[in-house]
Length: 431
Image 1 (tube, helix red, strand yellow):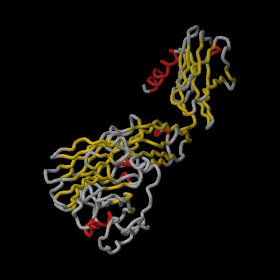
Image 2 (cartoon, rainbow, N blue to C red):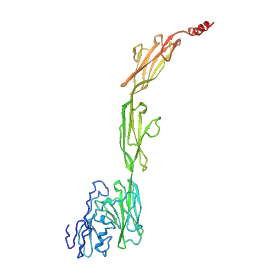
Image 3 (tube, rainbow, N blue to C red):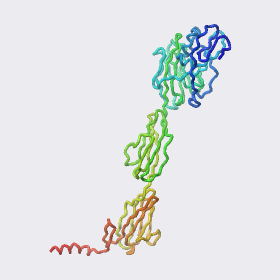
Image 4 (tube, helix red, strand yellow):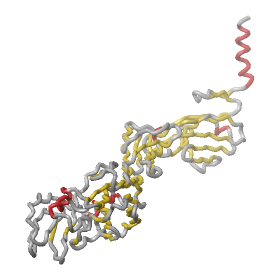
């Protein structure tokens, strides 16, 4: 680029020098620097100001021009060379016109970086805040300081200088000056976002020697589950894959737990839960928990339904005297719930049949006889069925004088005298 008046300025140099000063050797060219993607920084989203005119804020007029290449605002030479310079006329003073494009300070998160005097200026080591809170950046100074400023990589598209003395350079309204005293220079960033994380520099000028101290801002974010599997229905013996994706800073830990009285502890510590050959005992709710110690864990649940054919768990024969009320019960477990039907001697019994009532619920069926007669005694069959299959069980309604084998369902009529005759006859043969 050409200077409009006497003097020279080359792209890649740090300053434009007015007047008849000796030509300085050209500085190394500015390294290429990709622009920050839109939306990556709330600080960077503010519109960029006009080229900034920096009036020897940290570098006094008496400082030789050759020393200007040592850095602006206490910045190291490689960072200073990132500035693009232009010229402006101002009588009787040396002006520096810069468009600040400070290279990202490569500080390992969690480790403060300092240059110059190791004990001055003194900044905080690290600042850790939660997203949405306020971050305070403090820099301890003393009476040797003549100029002071806070800089940040977060303002790449506007100005890397947040505050210079009492003057605000960054357009972000969240950044405010907290203290500017003889012992402390502090700023505060409200409503901190994840894109504000990074290194911040406190730069001071004392006795013509710029010094810097850096602090790393760490932004923590509460865990949030952003994706989880929907409720699922599967036939017994199938394979199930559940997914739970969560975000947060630091990265949250994902755990899966089966919500069941028989389940013990966690069954998986991964985003993905795989179940092969699922059984009916593994049906129920599965809870995904995301935690990172920033806030309370967040949990969501997935319901897993395991389908299986009916299984009759209880069907007992019943003895009832003539003229009394009798009930036959049939209990069955099935998913989906079973449909029940009753038969007597291969003839289906219908609801509303004279003297009978059939009552079907989700897991059982009840056959009621309001006034038992001799014709009601006999063998009854309960059939339970759903889409996956069917099963049946037989039971007997018998009178008080019947001999019944509860295991086989066989029954026969008899009398108490006949039952007593058997052991007496066996006893007589022994003599």
